[in-house]
Image (tube, rainbow, N blue to C red; front, side):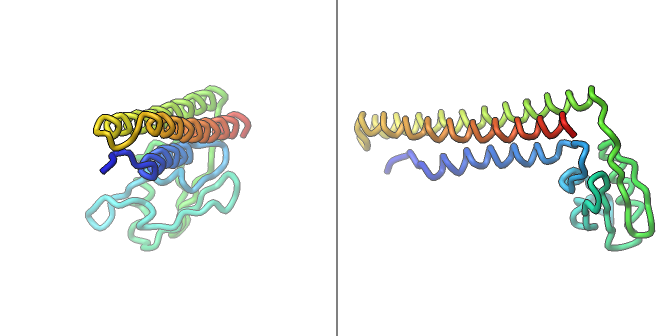
Length: 185
């Protein structure tokens, strides 16, 4: 049974790009984005819970996030959780709704965030290249066991390299797009 599995390699490379997009979504730009609050956890009902399990987050305006807490007894816990997350946001409570105005970013902070986006992209590309290495090793092992010929191995290695190039380009494109968004907002 051959070890090489193109679908698995493609799935793992795609996973690296999707993880990058998730990481980039969490970077704060000048605009309000609901994914900014994904890392927030609150202590409610005696347990630490993600914000998404105790409230609805929306972006009613370009520079404002709104958190609608479902149970009014949890409002202070949610407010505390947002403050502890160190996102640079100042919660303003209005009944069961917490409003989070987005402060302007300084030029220095924009550059730091753009650099961070580049670091996320580099980690993603390293993960993609590790998947490529695994695929190449599987192909060599299959050839050694005489399950595929040398010509097949070379053809499949080219295929793996093309997949790698495609996903690395996707990662670069996502990072460049995010860097431009950070620097121009």
